[in-house]
Image (cartoon, rainbow, N blue to C red; front, side):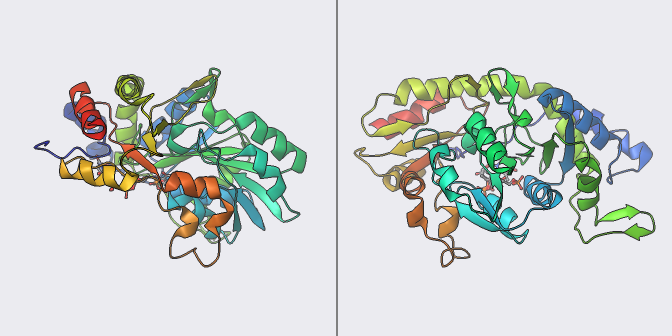
Length: 365
Ligand code: T4K
């Protein structure tokens, strides 16, 4: 048994002195939030790193997604998947829109593009696909469908920071992408998030939506909340961005070891990456399907050894109390099947290969 808990993930942090150095000037300026110098710098650096024309920072990924949806002036129905964190569905509903749940592809767990078109009605205004676990959606098929029906595409890319498709940054697909910079993510700003987007005309509205709808010192043109990233968050981001490539590389080593130990085992299914994708190794989902132990038994077994794997994403979002009488999870049977069997194993840059081996030994013995 591990003496210390092994959690599903552990925040990446810069060297303490590096962060202190980064925030030192804030004691001189006393400018702590409301789009200060650190905020501006992180935004510029992310535009370069993600190779996107525009980026807007937010206090967290959820509010970023809510504001992106609001900025697009959508109406009616939005097609999405229930195999995600509750945030995705909430962001649609809190904008007064109706989510329409599409099933997922059984290999990548992303939206099944073969089922998407049949869900489009005259009320559909957008698609919100999820790059779940950092597994990239079939972005080209989604683009084609969106073009054909004149739909907006806003990716929930909360998990996909740094992933690329044939060398092209994931954030360049669709009208916009939301990234979460939560402490549990590959790249973090403690709490935080961003919207990357193609149309520069959205800059003004996104900046207003995160700042109460204020359009001038004496004018407020619409009703909005507060979703600004503060200077301490941005400073954390500036530091973590310097190390993110190294972090991803270290995660790859951990994932390679899991793959080595768990692939080919009867009853254990590992998720597949599409051709041409460079992964960011955000999560390590394992599906227990016909294994000698059920997913829940493996969860308990690991827990008894102080290892805390997590059932991301169980239940489906359309099964939660607040939605279950409105939606039928039977309409997304593959999502339901995977959700009932999936477990995400511990994964972080500093997880030792020895610990990975111990986790695998416990599962396999
Ligand atoms: N869309 C998707 C697809 C998402 O997955 C998320 C967030 C969002 C949208 C919304 O983005 P944000 O608004 O959060 O930026 C966590 C995260 O809070 C959440 O960000 C994440 N997805 C979701 C999948 O997981 P919990 O409730 O499972 O986190 P918690 O507190 O149990 O932490 C998990 C483990 O992480 C801990 O056991 C240890 C480690 N940890 C946690 C924290 C808080 C750290 O090492 N450091 C920390 O500071 O939700």
